[in-house]
Length: 286
Ligand code: GUN
Image 1 (cartoon, rainbow, N blue to C red):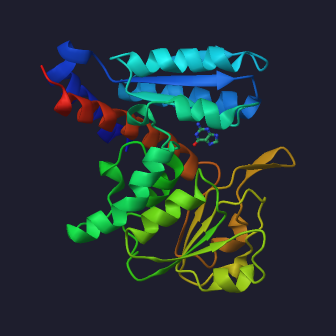
Image 2: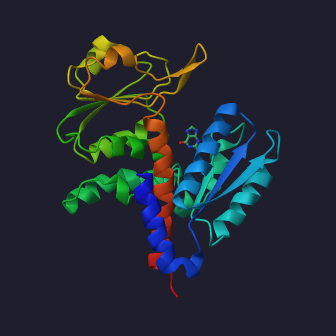
């Protein structure tokens, strides 16, 4: 996927480079949580790999919210910046800070405007007889988009998709995307009483609840496709939300942790940034 994006960036810059230069991504980190620093580092590395300029803005944990907002306001105005990402979690004022990002540069897809567009998209696609295509998206949640990319080659229409977790970042947008591909979608969460039985019905099972190895082998319908979004540290090693060793015996296809959804999420961030640039060039009045 990164190779494809890299080629697209090269072609775009060859054609339109003198207008805006290479696509640009701004990454804002507040504080120095080691997990956030690692994710931010991976985002910069991927940007470098595909030829996207990435700028880093680091703030102290106890900085003023107004300073972060001032930086976002300036980035909103910059012509060389196509994407603005604020690494989560934030120590405070998360909603206010995220809502400051121009929805046109919201490469995480967290802004209510972009969630609204994604929600509405299903009916629009059906009217036009089209299917949801993650490669055509901009400003939609990267992890959910990454899951859809990993499901390329899997039958989705009419299948039972069970999502464990209902977060704004993963579960909710993913449910919309799967619906837009005609899956029958079920959410399971902390109040669901019969999780194992629900999982056993799933043709597509997505684990995104942040509970180390909670999904056992005997929760999986033989032949199911299993996508593990969890990243948990257990006895100093990274594990997913699925007990991989057990699950791999029942699943037809399964993603590992680390190495599955994580890198695809980062790749989708690059795609959102590139697609914002393509969109802006197409609408530029010059
Ligand atoms: N923290 C964990 N996942 C994410 C993500 O997808 N985007 C941002 N901005 N922060 C995160």
